[in-house]
Every structure is written in structure tokens, then in C-alpha cells.
Length: 99
Image (cartoon, rainbow, N blue to C red; front, side, top):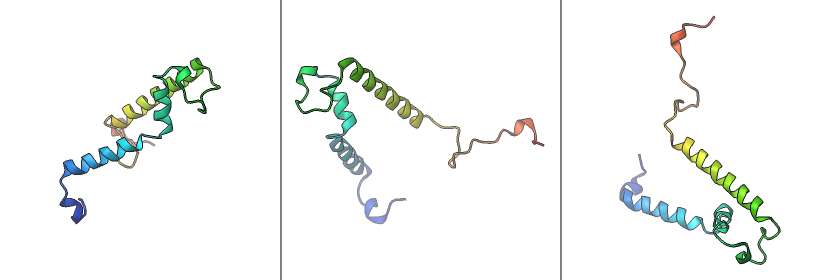
């Protein structure tokens, strides 16, 4: 149920617009910047960067943990849930009524 003006725009055009907006918002995102630093040598970090004083091993461990958390959150978000829309799990009536 889209508002009337949005019904005139084809869905692939809207999907492309939202994808473009999402891709352009990644520039300057601190998490994306930190993940990109994993691919660079420590000597090539920007001179005024906040990560200069941190050891490479601690930085890498921290970023990997963040990536793992992101993957777990995305996995749970994409799974079909057994919860209802209101967040309450369905009642198990097979055990009979509670007293």
C-alpha cells in the first residue's frame, strides 16, 4: 500500500534509489572506515588517525569481533522467526491448561 505518487514510480527504480542512498552513506561511516583499515598496512594509516596509538593485534581482534557480531545480528534478522508480530512466542497448548 504505497501512497499514490509512489505507485507511479516503478519498484526497480525505487530499489535502485535506495541502494544508491545506502551505498553513498557508507562513505564516512566509522565502522566501514575501520574495516577498510584492516586491508591496509599500519604504516599507510593517515597520520592524524585515531588508530595510530593502538597495537595492530588488538585493533585486528577488535574489528574481527565487531564483524562477527554484525554477521550474527544479520543472520538472526534474516531468519524466519517463530515469534509473532508482537514479539510474543506462540503458546504451547499441547501440555493442557496451567493451574
